[in-house]
Image 1: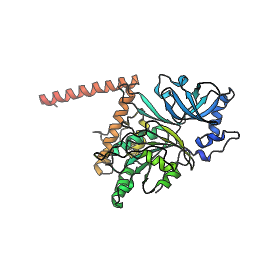
Image 2: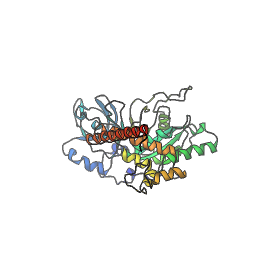
Image 3: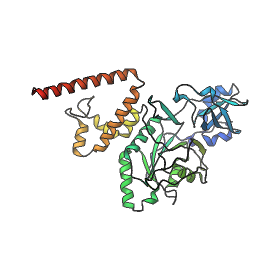
Image 4: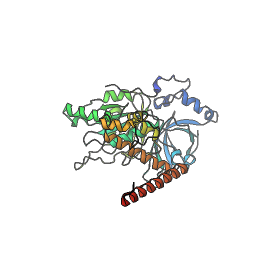
Length: 376
């Protein structure tokens, strides 16, 4: 199986002279050292956030783990709060120690919260690989996989779908069909089958996450913590059995934890996600459904809605069977959802949506009136 190359490889970067040795396994490199240089002149210290609690966080520094207060980095914008994976700028002394700020993020994995305000929630920062864990113990939900992929692409990380618990599908033909289904839903993304029980695929996954920072994502019961333990080579993350009634998992991991892997690389394990709401992820959706966007480029009209317009290449692909109805419906659903989320914070777009809604309503009323009266 071939996997797409990572967008970045920290291990390939030259090590700057004088870098804190303890931070190198956590992703410290010359680029971060250059970013931190102005703070070093002020006598401040760098460190990577390994865990965040309410009002405090654990930061790995050159001298080990430091418990620090986050009072200076708790703005009203939830996307600017400090997060696991951030590179913190710490006071050198004090009791308590304070995080003064954090270095600009290279990437950020953000989802929409379940609140009515539809705020964004940052799950992990400075991530190179987004590992989407999907359990083969339950029926595949391709739509959910596409959601995770849209957020992963939007974050700037390289996605990888890992089908866990492969030992529960002993028939290789059935397993092959499941992998094909996921590959169809994940164009341009590697799909790997693994089993923490037998060790199948874990060596390949270890090679992928052996450089840079990886985040493990998925719903409860997907086997993320078991997978993390397999990669760490020791029992670090607590695990629980899934429920027999529906195969769903119980929340075991309750915080996002950053761990250095023994073979190199850094892993962020996350709690199981109940909801995977999009947050301003139009580019990510386009990447997931790249084949639809390629068809759309061949439509006669550049603003084709792919509904009743003549010369629509997307509808032609649907009619010929080249494009599945499921993929098209999922594409439309995610675009509509993303548009609603953006409209709640974008006044101009919200106005355009209301105008379009009024026009469609007026058109619908006119069509109904014409049909009722028998006029063309």
